[in-house]
Image 1 (cartoon, helix red, strand yellow):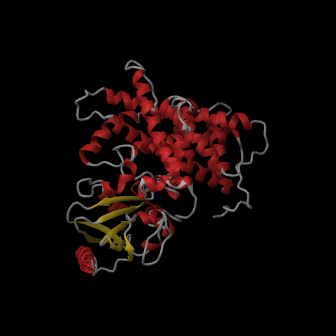
Image 2 (tube, rainbow, N blue to C red):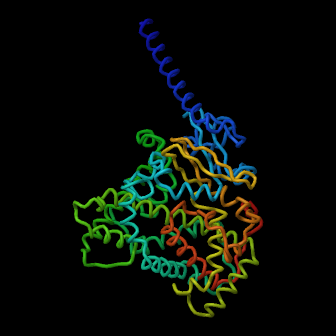
Image 3 (cartoon, rainbow, N blue to C red):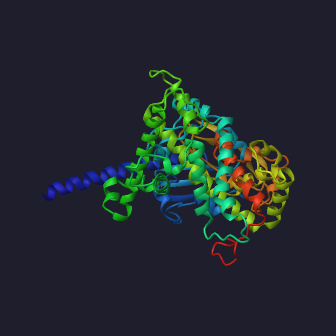
Length: 485
């Protein structure tokens, strides 16, 4: 017995030492290219891609922690527009970028810097999709989804938002001198979901799905969006035995069933039916291809892509609107200027989709909110070959080598707060988007996401115009615990 235990112990020890040696050798190989350079480095035991970063605060020398990019913004890039993080487990050195030219070089070459699809596994919980895929699979998803993000759907987003704002705000609030909302996100989440239901599915949220569900579409979507990392980080049996978390599994099952029903219902409507909603356009584009076509999406791929559209259109839009309303409440002068701009264009009539181009200040406010609070704060890439990047060092361009296999993180927060591109970057100043502005230094939805930007901006711009046209002042109470933070 003692002999067996000793053998097992020695075997485990040798295995552990071998793994450590492998990680150290990989780390040394990666370090050769950069160790001689005076580039800022931050070391930790666990890497930037560790799941622990999703749940824990930063621990110096151990863990980068949640919101790593938000905690420093531009501080790590004072001298260089790049910095490195070095981890022991896995043994890896990662490059972080807040340099617009280097970021453009990375994002414009999918061959040299592909997406590390393993880091996007959390988004494949319902199936492969355009966000989690790369190469030929990404092109297939892009071909189908690109047809859905049309001007027809963008106009529907605008019209739906105006209708929702009238129903939720303008109608019920008309005639009142003061409306008090304790948590604005309760309102913006309702706005975003109502618009999503109308513009994405062509129906109100209450009519989505059958009566057999134990959880509403709204509640299941919100719970899934809020607990994705718990679902990925823990086995189902562990989640299930905890009563508080058991409903998370139910939410995932319910949301999947909702999407299955949506696909079946729309197919039952027949090919002859036409609609401008996102889901209808997506299915119509997919049905144009033969069942054996390499482009046609199967049902799991349809659910996967539908889910990422739901995720971005619900949580992302709602939180951006919350930030936008809060910023306007804190800056009365900007709010007054917006009100004057809108009333000059509209007078007493309701806004239309064609009015967007005549209210540039509204779009400037949306963009400035997205600059200060980008929904996508970090964009991971991975070097597919030995290459190099030109980065800025105190205003002087310098070439740094990027070895094959190195993780490259586009730090959107660092980029958006980089004073080389944005004067006084901490200030809420929408006017910066009225003149020429550094377009390569603005990536609120990630690199190469123009179709997302068009849909999201249509929602936020139209959500801003009706209330600003009907109500003159937004205020934030000073006694609110979040005031000034």
